[in-house]
Amino acid sequence: MTVSLPPYDAIILGAGAAGLMCALTAGRRGRRVLLLEHTDKAGAKILISGGGRCNFTNLAIAPERFLSSNPQFATSALRRYTQGDFIAMVQRHHIAFHEKTLGQLFCDGSARAIVGMLLEECAAGGVDLRLGQTISSVTKPGLFRVETTAGPFTAPALVLATGGLSIPKMGATGLAYDLARQFGLRIILARPGLVPFKAADADAAMAGVSLDAIASLGRQSFRENILFTHRGLSGPAILQISSYWRQGEAITLDLLPGHDPAAFLTERKRARPKAAPQTVLAELLPSRLAQAMTAAHLPPGELANIPDRTLAAFAGVLKAWEFRPSGTEGYAKAEVTAGGIDTRDLSSKTMEAREQPGLYAIGEAVDVTGWLGGYNFQWAWSSGWSAGDAV
Image 1: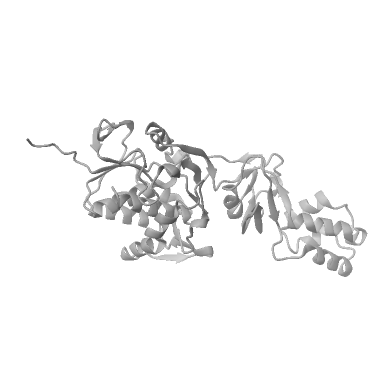
Image 2: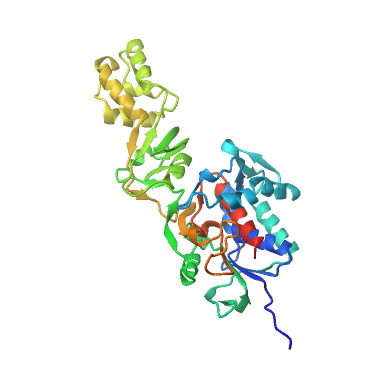
């Protein structure tokens, strides 16, 4: 008696960074892979990342630069498939790249080169990529059965790589969470990550002001630019700290890192007693910010008429300005989704569900969120490779 085998060894849902990486890895192992994407474009988020140049990894990848309810979970995948491994693939495809600040690697040209590389690798591995495939249901009567607009497909392995909820205009959905719950996996509450803050008292006159600052929350701090917006605060330092923030908490901002504003203001008071505080402070801060801070915290008049103790107190504000966000800009502006499929239910080596053999979850869908600067792409490559090496 002839036994009919399914045409695929694995079905991967989602042709983003993690899904493409998983597919090409499995395909190179000789696995028969079906890669399904509900939009009409593979790697859509890759194409818009890094201003269109794709910040595809970071030289300083380390497990402690990833957030998770299980902080050690990402370690295995990140060590088994490193930034060096992905860089080697980029170099094999002769894609020129450069390092920016803080170890960030960007394409010299377009992010299309990275997507093209991944698609070329998938094609070499015989991956069957199908775009525009709406998934209506997934069941497991023995094999995983995926019902789509093109009909049903079956395979013994199913990989959830549909991402999180960030940037819904790019097609983000909660499908991975829905399917994870269906098969008994737990979900860590999802929330926007790497996202600008809103402020109830945002001053539109400050919009566009940018400066180097340190944003801190508890023991975590980041020194990069912050940007005032019409609605609140953004910029790299703000996006970084936002992933650690919870509603109601205050962010502390050092607006003059590397400076001693108390000594500076006291010296200027002696040297320029008739100067206005905002005038001298504008030597260190953008003029609009200097004007706003002095107006809010110092009496009007010349420096000579302001007591040293008042200047010292003001210096303390400049070094530890408390900003209490009213909320975030939400998933529409969030670069990633924090939270997701609970890592306690997954193998850290293979990304396979512990209690549901053949089911895998990778990338942004999982409760692992990296810092800004290529970390989340590296998690996509590492987790995708780990699952692709196992299916």
